[in-house]
Image (spheres, one colour):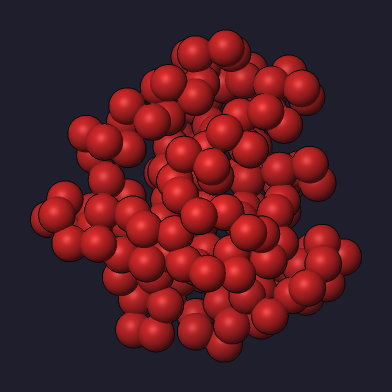
Length: 152
């Protein structure tokens, strides 16, 4: 996972209130870095409405939004931790609201990479102590150190 992390696309302890705010911030940085095409934001938003990605965990909520490969020029994972949860609809039923505290936006353009990354992320999401450490990080350096210490 660490190979796909890009500094400008890590938002630690952010103050986003809605999915749109999260998506717009990631899109702005990803466009600036030339990681995505101009259709990325609309495709990401559209896919989230059709196939929600909220994941209710035991203590916190998470989300793993992603979109079509043709919108991604250079692969990345954007990670957002938020001060207050951002609502996502549950991937289980598309109706239940999941208050997400950590959001992994996947910008992948190779089919095999997406499957491997989803498997890796599920391992992270099942590790409560690791999630708590990531959420406790108050800056990017601490966040990256936690990622490296856990060989992600």
